[in-house]
Image 1: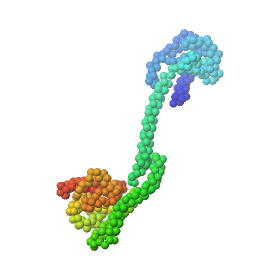
Image 2: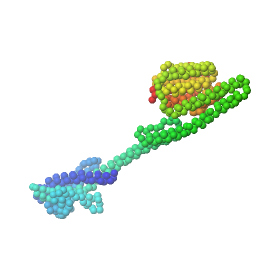
Image 3: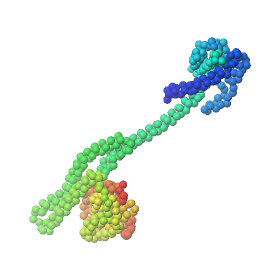
Image 4: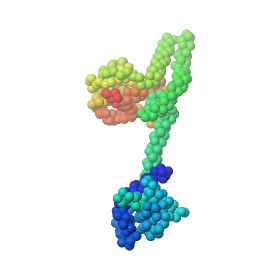
Length: 465
């Protein structure tokens, strides 16, 4: 910027000054032509007139610079270049025919020069612009106007100061914008880093609207992650299956070995029932692990259809008719008819089935189970309450963790711990919400306030976004 200022601004200012002096020189040449012809320029009257003009007081405020006097010098030469008048009274009688302003003008060219009054001081430079004096088409002399370059320095300095101030503002603005860009880059890269660190199967990959390169990095991480997860996935489920299948297989083997012996009929029936029970447990475990595998691998590829949630809940309740009778449960239903929403019928049915499993399993004999379905504008609310022991405080934060389970109150056996994990993932893929908490019956109304139990609260959006 300094180089640009020195190469452009200062010369341009001096060019404007030169333009003005050239005009003034030609005007004065016309005004003094008769005086030069009549040899009046050497008289005191002519000198007084010129001095009065040059010392005229000014009161001008030019671009915030106060100008009080005229800073110009005039000298006149004869046709040979000899000075016949000098407003300063210093050069009269000297031969100026070799100075560029006079020499070029006498040659019929544009005469101009810039000379230092002090050779050692660059600020003492004076610009001289000459014009020919004609009288009746005859060249009778030369008039030259001189102006110190220092007289225009305040305007140059003001322009330089403003340029510096603007440069500072531009620098600050550039630093601010650069900081914003740097913060955006850091924040975006940090999102990619966190995504790379997160190993949750349903973690959403970040997308950047104006950063194609970051999207490519995210895509590369996604591909790498899928390959790594596939290996870890197989290893994880082999280990889990080995652990989960070991207990029921051991029980089946032990019962089968006992059945080889000659034992009473009643004992045979007992061990056969035990084998059937453990076999059913194995089947349930395998079915749910296959469901969880399918859900995790499909990610967000759910098939949305317009379904009636009311009918879906009623159909699932029908499947538990025998269990409700066996435990003599007091089932209270408050299901609004024809509640419609966009959802995947299979996965939403699996969700409701798993929640009803838990509600009926953890409800003791003759306990109350309350199921409510309501639609409020664009939201469907499902509440499932079962009377019974509250969930221990330590388990509330782990309730949706895969393979985490609590013992059933009647059998003291634990489930596979997969059901609620499936529920959580299905709810998230439907952009819905689920909450399981301990509560009393008066929180949902219609029941006596003194019993306690567990409430599941689900909110589904009727318009899937």
